[in-house]
Image 1 (cartoon, rainbow, N blue to C red):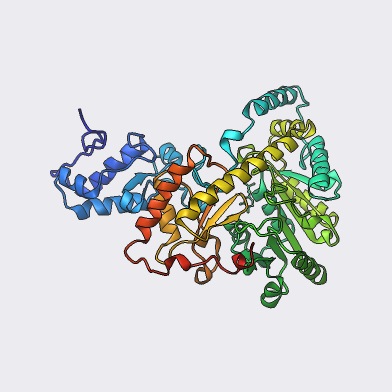
Image 2: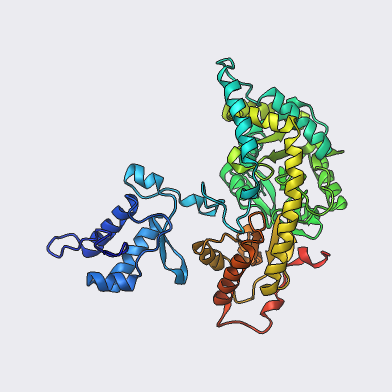
Length: 494
Ligand SMILES: Cc1ncc(COP(=O)(O)O)c(C=O)c1O
């Protein structure tokens, strides 16, 4: 039987009689095999040495071919684990051209597939209330089918906005009118609405350092000048922001639970930030991505909840609390900016998909949302405890952070390299250093979400991760390797 990775099975034809260079012929054959799906996403390519031997060509020829395929985003190199076919090839298949998803490399991959252990930003897949949700969606589809064939309110369904307003009053102590709420497709759409409405182009914007990479990308896309402001154990160091850019238009922050360090902004820092915004007429964009999912005690009220809230644009999403597959979030605009935000939303991005909105309305109204959140908090607290225990065995100094843990690495290890190798082994840790704007300040470490680990898989996934870390940091391992800490934010933590 032919081996699936053999040149014959992959239809690699080398014709020395034609004028086409041999490297081009091999490249074209492999490309064809990938585009047609004979080499499946994730599949490992033959090693350069094997393929060269089987085809009777120089190894350097194969190396050049693989480099070309990597540059075209058709395959990726995973260090000693070899070269693998990329997972998103739709563009290439449709157009017969190379995949164009290069800019998405930093986003929450993998897309549209089962969440991997340690993958950030996704809730527990096994605990999603699928049956209940299917019932609600079915009812919503029927209601939507017989609804008027007319435009919906660009701010979102009034019933949903009313439910969100009541929920925020209870869970985040926010007093807002439903007309201040604009339903969006998620945090990112809310952020772009806010940045457009506040005219951030060409203006300075404070960004937490470390901070959510997609927040940074959004600021860059809109043309704002990003000013990194360090975070310590009390959250954003407001005085550092004031020292470097007092005239900034806005500050983009995660005060409830800093992403990814998990620290809650202290009352003094909250006050200082609100005072700066009031004194300078600046804006605070509050990214409340976890909402009330606080695993230690009760969540602090939103910044948009108290005095000074007229300077805060609050952005929430159901991505963490229900699922990112919903594609639903919301903005709460301060009264003075409501008209600007509503105008931008109506022109640029009216509220999405009425069926999903109706289903979520029922989910909230009938108490399922609160129940689900309660269950998820208990589940995540247990999964985080389990993850901390296991990871601390091979990476001492690991700390709880948000819905997971952050693990320091030996001095000799590169977190991005480890992340690349782990991905090829079916794990999805994130590199802490990728969350820094300034590479010189970047702290290395692994961000490990606990939402999709459980007693049945934790032993195996931790053993795999431990061996990847060990093999990636061996050789140059220093005796004081383990002493590398996690920076100032971790020092005063309990
Ligand atoms: C800091 C932060 N904000 C917001 C989000 C949610 O973004 P979206 O609703 O666009 O999926 C995430 C998701 O990972 C996040 O980490």
